Amino acid sequence: MATTAEASAVLQPSTPAGGQAAQANQSGQQQQAQQAPPPAPQETVESLVREIEHLKLKLDEERRKLNDVALSTIAQRLETIGPVNIKPRRVLKGHQGKVLCADWSMDKRHIVSSSQDGKMIIWDAFTTNKEHAVTMPTTWVMACAYAPSGNMVACGGLDNKVTVYPLSFEDDVSQRKKAVGTHTSYMSCCLFPNSDQQGCDRQALIWDMRSGQCVQSFEGHEADINTVKFYPSGDAIVTGSDDATCRLFDLRADREVAVYTKRSIIFGVNSVDFSVSGRMLFAGYNDYTINIWDTLKGTRLTILYGHENRVTCLKVSPDGTALSTGSWDFTLRVWA
Image (tube, rainbow, N blue to C red):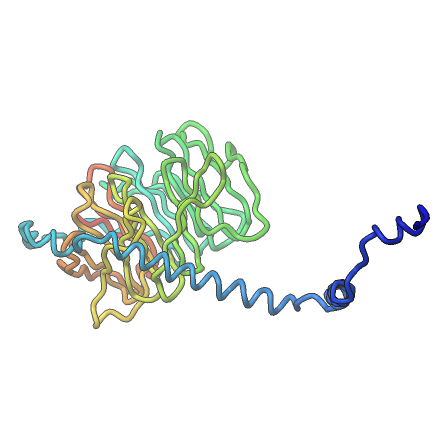
């Protein structure tokens, strides 16, 4: 009869030789995995870039599946816009440098402009008189804007500051100025609420101001984007670029719906704006011209000549009856 110790030895299961080998092999693999160096950062970045490009292609394919008809096809049913009879009615002279920015007041009469000469001027567009002329602390005042109320203007440039000037005939405007923000580099654009902004990375971005997050991005340009403008309904944006094209992006369809270009146009676009109805698109170019496009049909209606250097800014008046343009030829012009 077997003893208790012998019975325990008999009943205790033994580990098969194959199992021991498997455990040893697994242990060796774990040690090798621990000893293996991690992938190089460059390899990780490259793989992520490839994955991003692949996802972009898939997104483009999905967007194309949603297309039902082209904008230009729908626009064929519309009547063609008749001859556009726009002429220069006023020439505003006073700047001693390149005009870099201009904006209309909501009273449909006054214009603020800023220039390379370091001055900001408030104009009466009807009489061409200068109502205010403010000398800035630096040259190259690259941005200016009228407040919706018309009671103040903002401007800035190489001073890295956003400065607001309340407008009054009773006091010296420059004495009532107030700096409301300081950047770490020069300021290229300033706008009051209900406006937009632009970038130089070939992309147009839509931002949620509440969260500070980018909610949409549009690609298509082959060079820097110099200007962007919302369509009057707010459902689309148009961009102008150094690639000599303007492009219309539909925010609801999340895609490009029109390109405004001709083979003969080889100069960049600096500024764009819509007519009040949105049917016409105005674009200022580096070849000293303003091109007027049919927004829906994508055809060019006419070309405005008059400036003697690149057209850097343009703006349709609030009531749509006039167009102001600024140029490196030191002048502003009012067209109607």
